[in-house]
Image (tube, rainbow, N blue to C red; front, side):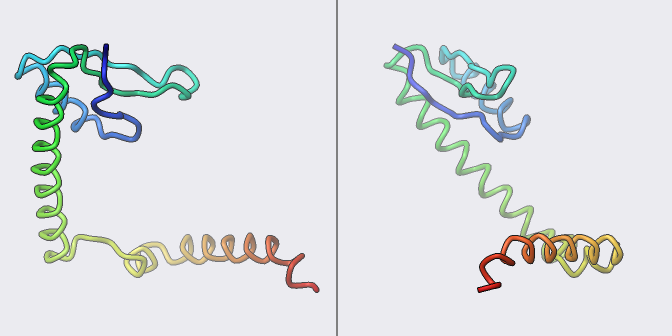
Length: 119
């Protein structure tokens, strides 16, 4: 019976491709399900053979630990180089757009809370 290995909802394409290659390189039989036309199904990778599930799980855990370390290192490097944008950077780049969006947020909050604040 097939076992769920990896849920693919909101997974980046490069990560999904890496997982597929990892399974193929290690000769693990798998199949993939997709979200369908309306996105209500479970997009995932399933291992066909129960005996291979533990091997696939350990390979996937190792891959995800390596990927997490790599992404964190890239983020820290970007942070040190000043490439990570903050809310202040967004304001400096497009102040009018920023002020309009904050005004819309304030309007939505006001309209949402007006009933409760009128008592």
